[in-house]
Length: 256
Image 1 (tube, rainbow, N blue to C red):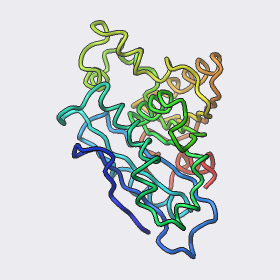
Image 2: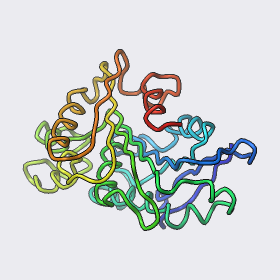
Image 3: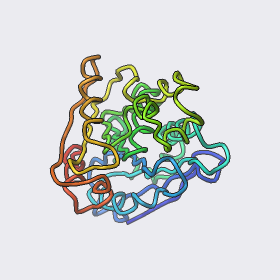
């Protein structure tokens, strides 16, 4: 397994780890690029390393995996919208920093027209917001799939419920800045040309499965291509366990 640390910006947390198989003999003819956006309440309590085992597994299955870090609450410059624009910039690194880091023969195997973005929990909010802002395209790539794993998909609802983690990201309570919450909320975004798959476990106590169900029903009614997969008997953290059904469902959706 080959892992490279690549900076996509000048700040300490503007970097990611790029994974791919080390041997050309193990390399498939077509490699799907997969972006991983970790969760963790948008705070420095968690980092991209919680996705490391998943990143390695996906790379072993033939994907080009970009596990990204971003500025989190507790770091200089973090908060909304900077935390969101970091993830958007990390995805746009597919135009520059990432292909520049690859050998030509490896770069030629990557299908830049079929990028997938996977976000867990808080990372799902960042993933969906970023793809919506990009309109599912960068200068040289197309994003075709977004997987929202037990994600924070309705920041307005969370703000009205005074969720401390969301207030920390937004920089204040919902009543003081309702438009800021609306602009950051995945459920409020205009439809974009990619398929969204919301995956959620029935035992999730951090973010109830009804959040994903409500998101899919709402955005489908507006014309967004989206579906819901409900996984019985698994909870919020199952997505960072390579052995879980939630992860196997993600692998199935990604086709790797």
